[in-house]
Image (cartoon, rainbow, N blue to C red; front, top):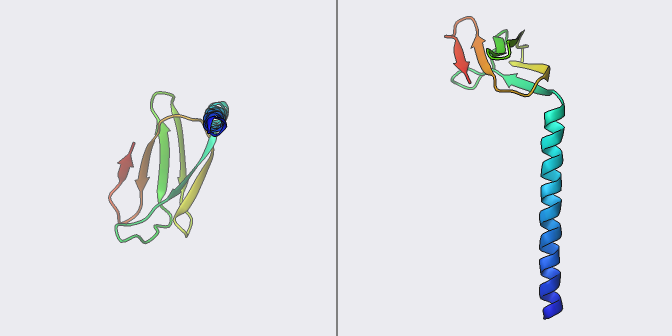
Length: 100
């Protein structure tokens, strides 16, 4: 019984250490490089919106990129530095939309 309780405590400590190590590695890995932002533009009915212009920007850093969605309503921004961004979308026949 004592051995069983001791093993349970050791396993919990090992599990906690593994979780903290993996979480720390993920945080450091994210801090070292840029990421990818994938955007899918849909209308209020859920249909994709082709040829929508999408801008991601950060007024503090001055970073801004604009791209246009494909026929599937999707676009990708690669090598985006980690930060907070504002996303602005415009498309013919729709009111512009902005989101933080």
